[in-house]
Length: 292
Image 1 (cartoon, rainbow, N blue to C red):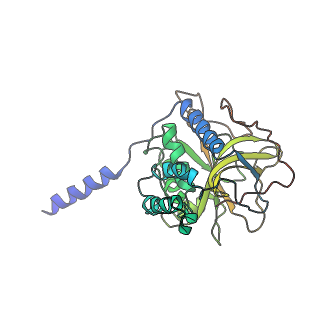
Image 2: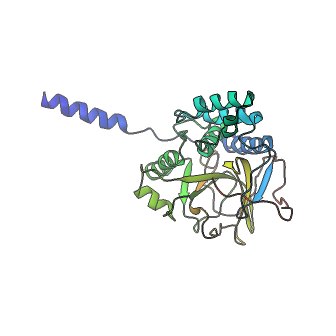
Image 3: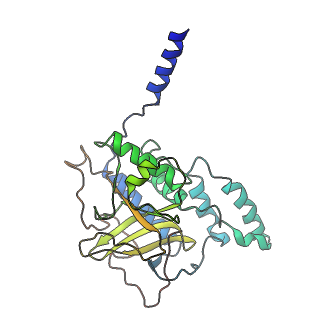
């Protein structure tokens, strides 16, 4: 009997070891960028500098016209924290002109659901990117894969001062009162809840990184973050969410699709055709966009 128990335990441990992540063609990263840009355009192509005062976006999440957009994001995650049922009720209230309808999609935050939607729609399977309503869940999985399978992991974490973002990378910040400043701190903290936010880099260059994220100014927003002359993100002002990791997107950049992993450095949106150029001009006085 004891031998059987030991064999069962050994079998359970063996079954728990995941298969290595698959390597994806460049089309996955290109689709990811096209989808992010298309969603941003559907929300009105809101563009904002990163650190100005927050103001609501026109046609934001509580507009009933945007109900199916956020619903699609939540349907991309396996556990929606009751968001769909609660907001279906709020949507019905909004259509009926009842006051509570004004709270449509205001909670829970849907930024992680947006990232998950983009990944699933791009064709990145759940083994390589586990969709989640929480940023920490998929980030912990990406960190584990990078440690266990460095040759094929689709995303590699870097410290903000160690790597210049490229189009398709995930820019991640800590929103807590005692923020971490490096992804290795998260690796030691894996599994614990921590409020975070990630955006998808869509264009980079000397002095700036443009990124698209969900639930930013109550919409899908393109934010221009400040970088140095070589494309490395600069620290954000006091009180703003703190950068702790850039996840290098290696979709389409690993053998057999590429001879070597991508190299750090300024980049642009590559083959993706976006509604605006990489040199987007910001009108004077344009309201800004905190991470949310």
